[in-house]
Image (cartoon, rainbow, N blue to C red):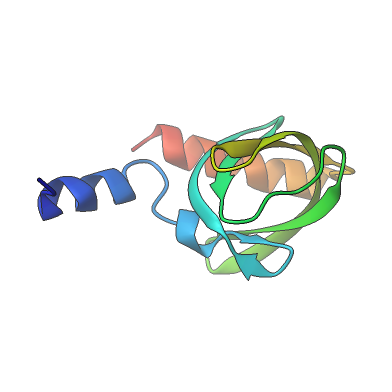
Length: 104
């Protein structure tokens, strides 16, 4: 009972750019939630807890790449990633992404 209209709405709800998020250079994000503290993602591949990975997030035609540390990982369900070593510009961009999401 797949309704294509429902799928389209779900896919574009709040995170229209989620498929463009790269984790270690690979398109792996199947769903996501983002906050200033970090990211919760469901991904194809799992990482070990405390692994440090690169996360590339598109924003206004540019790509922001930041370091993240895996705080927990449940294979097949998802993982939490804490942003680490952010400078002021990266924090500003992430906050702008959050603001743009919340305004939808």
